[in-house]
Image 1 (cartoon, rainbow, N blue to C red):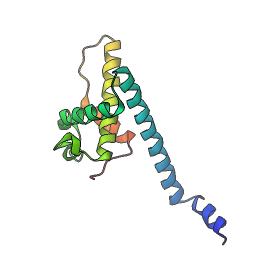
Image 2: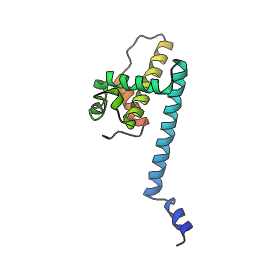
Image 3: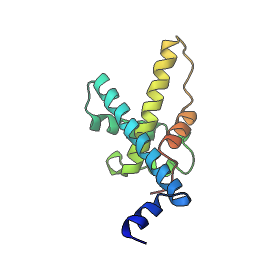
Image 4: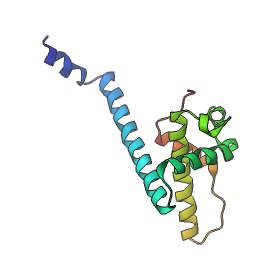
Amino acid sequence: MTVAGKKNARWQGGQIEGRYNDISLYNKNIARIRAAVNDLAQRLNMDRQQVEDVAVVWGMMFRDSAPKQVQPAFTGKPSAVAPGTRILAAAFFVIYTKAVDRMQGLGSDDAIDAAACWQAAIELVGGWHAE
């Protein structure tokens, strides 16, 4: 088989194709999270790094609502958080703030379910595993 044939064979059916599709979907979600963080940063007159730092602290504040396997990632100093944890925190922060905005838009004073926001954030980033 030629080199081109081997390269093309990797992309044809089977588990490898599914794996690449999952990675592609994950990358699209991460890009959307970063775009939402940038939008939030503009709205709050902050830069992206500041919003990510706030998201990590927000994740630490709502750590008890997170699933048990996620909670250890949000312990310690905020500056020592792993990059994957920062992405999860950003996803949680964006989801939570959008939920608050929507509830205020409806004129409701109901509390936001932080556990549901954590679940949505974990699904958005493609699952969670300890780093």
